Image (cartoon, rainbow, N blue to C red; front, side, top):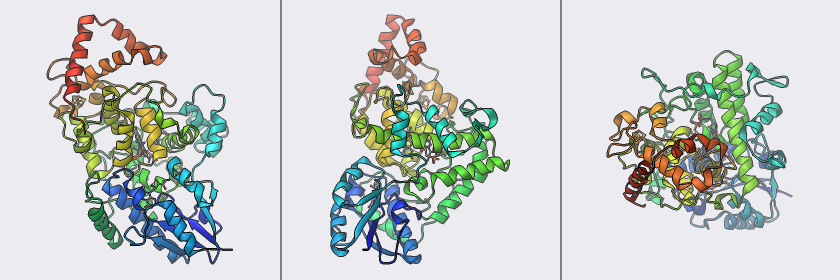
Length: 502
Ligand code: FAD
Ligand code: DLZ
Ligand code: SF4
């Protein structure tokens, strides 16, 4: 009996579990479907990246001698959903068994129930959902740090026997430097679109004109060789400084020393194992310091695996909580970038232009504003899911719902990542170009993050005051006189009333 082997748009890995025992006579099914393209208005570059990478991957499989049944989006017979396309494929390949690798998203996992397929583990991850559930069982708190240590032990990465190399698990305290004025981070690597990508760009321009973001210039890698080149560039040109300036932000350069490889890992052009191995090797060869290499490996082996474990442990209920009862609609400027707050204008502008912003921009600029202003988690989550090239629900949702918005009530983060303008001023040069002043607390020039911060603490006192990690800010708040508190509440209310809903 032959086998129909399904490969989804984020499963573009030659060693994928569903392809592993491929035999002559088998067919690989790949489907471009409208439903996946429009369930949120994905950034145009994200659509181009996925469709072009799918088409290149299919060509590579064919070149390797495999038979690929590839349904294009513009095929007139295309029915537009995974399930109906699988049904049509079964009619074309009637006596085939169906094999698929488990999907990244709960939504797609539910669809798969009706496919009659053998669903295999996605062993591109270091951990499994079952392994994470076993780790989580009986623990009061699911702190990433302890999970990460187990992942280090299990993978052997940066280990010397049972101990972490350098005698320390985590060098985070060395990874918070602000960027020196004369720092010259390398240019972001760009890949010129080939003919196949140009065809996809034209299709996306014609079919999805109302989607978010600039389609061109498009510079993402869409093949494994190019993604490997991007990884090489990161390891040689950026990794040595990655640790020191991981949290820094700079106007006009959103990439700094970041790897910009998350879309490639998430769609399968690179594997988490190889990127960690390459970083570890750079340290062993003396080409990058330990604080940088540990910092990078912690993101991939720690955070990335942790959020996936948490997602599968808690879904489908995870996204339904709203622990801080936040209900404000998303402001229009999240789509346009048109706001006087320079940090937000820069971050959203870069997001529109590149389908990318680095972690601290996502967490401490757009995320921090959403948290302090009490924006509706569902609206914010939809925004994050569609604006970034690397966004898939399994990784986007815990980062947004849990880490940025504290909407899970503290499952993921031990306290909200709430900060005033002083933090953004310390970590960036945005404030110099802003009409607001981070040193002003009240008045027309006051940075809105300043009064929104205290407004947030007052508004959420019943949820947060008993959190031991919030003791310090609440102590400061209790020393504030009532008149001052009223002024802050008034300033925040006036500011929030000016936000135009999208
Ligand atoms: P680097 O800074 O170079 O980090 C290296 C790698 O570590 C990344 O490529 C990524 O694979 C991994 N990584 C780092 N931080 C995280 C994290 N918190 N969770 C998971 N993996 C991590 N990441 C996504 O891949 N998709 C998302 O949809 C996504 N949404 C986010 C939403 C919010 C609100 C926040 C705060 C973070 C989100 N992240 C998401 C995590 C992180 O911001 C991105 O992985 C990172 O910015 C990607 O850029 P990079 O490749 O240059 O990463
Ligand atoms: C995000 C996306 C898009 C836009 N289009 C497709 C597609 O046409 N075909 C496909 O196989 N996958 C696509 N994807 C990825 C899926 O929506 C989904 O996020 C992953 O398969 C994770 O379950
Ligand atoms: Fe952002 Fe406030 Fe700085 Fe302006 S002053 S850039 S709003 S932190």
